Image 1 (cartoon, rainbow, N blue to C red):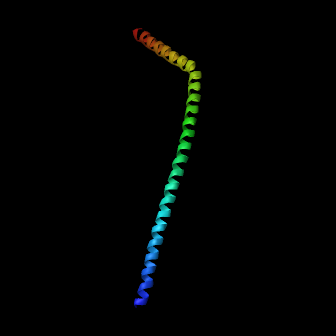
Image 2: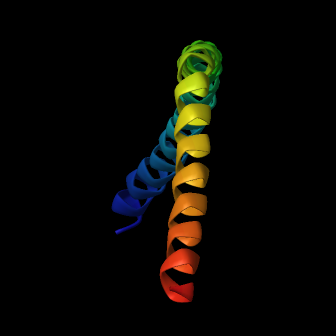
Image 3: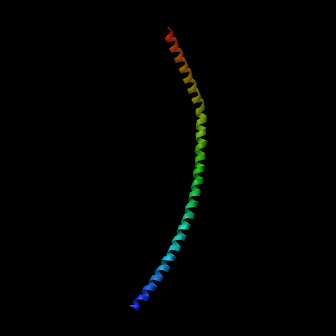
Length: 94
């Protein structure tokens, strides 16, 4: 029995050493992967920021084109509302 006990102990020590080495490799790989992910996220974040600025400039250009039309519609609405109120007052007094 003692003869069998010694190889088991060596096997256990070898497994423990192998598992520790495996954990170190896995930890290093995870650290490397996290650095790659962070680098990729930063690149994408910069690209998205540039895209947002481009879309914002396009939106502002469209709003600048629509501003006169929106102003005309607002004035037209106010004039119509005023005319309807005056018409209602005239209809009520007669």
